[in-house]
Length: 296
Image 1 (cartoon, helix red, strand yellow):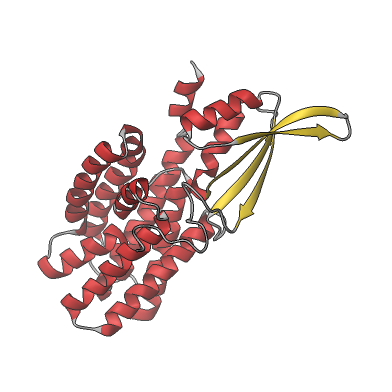
Image 2 (spheres, rainbow, N blue to C red; image 1 turned 90 degrees about the vertical axis):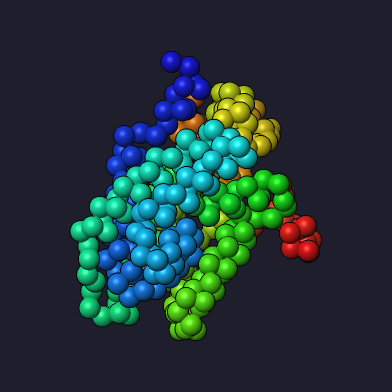
């Protein structure tokens, strides 16, 4: 089996279990803690909540239909690889939400404040487990990915704009500033919990990879991860022998892919991973002091 086929099978059995567990935690947190108190949040989940509150259509149904349309767009604008990567979690969440909505019909906690806190943390943990397993539930992530592909703006900023719009839209339904504020609080807690699960609030990580197979590693980083990297010269001070070092920056949720790629090429490779608080340039954040076209 060649390296390319091995990479396409990089979702180990353990990953599927973790993804399903994360989706289950998210679905239970949403249906058992948040829905009974008619609160809203960002993302496609927030859109589905608004649809349910206003029409009674189950969350799983609206989520599935909207996500299906977004996946079709992703197929044309982002490619087959992105869709296949997202499909398992999207379908899985639809099924689990269907089951959860049919079996959880009352609030699991009687205190509203406690329910909102537990629900938000649970949703964040569940989504974090999915992202940490190198997957995605799609939704507004697809919109952000399409926008960032054609415009010089960070994905995080696009997601923020979309979430703000969704949460503010809840005012049209509830006519309540309190609901809007609670929506922002819930989304903030979810994002924080996601960051904690996938190891910190940093946006990007830096890798230094030491391996005699540096050329293969660098080539596969370019072709499979579609990330740029640099090969720099170094000297092992103990051995006094020259060596090549692969250096690259990736998003935090791409770290797992980097480790797996290196491991299958050279199990004895030496890798260091460093948290990076700011990465600016193509594929990351805009340069400080500059404005993107979208920002005006």
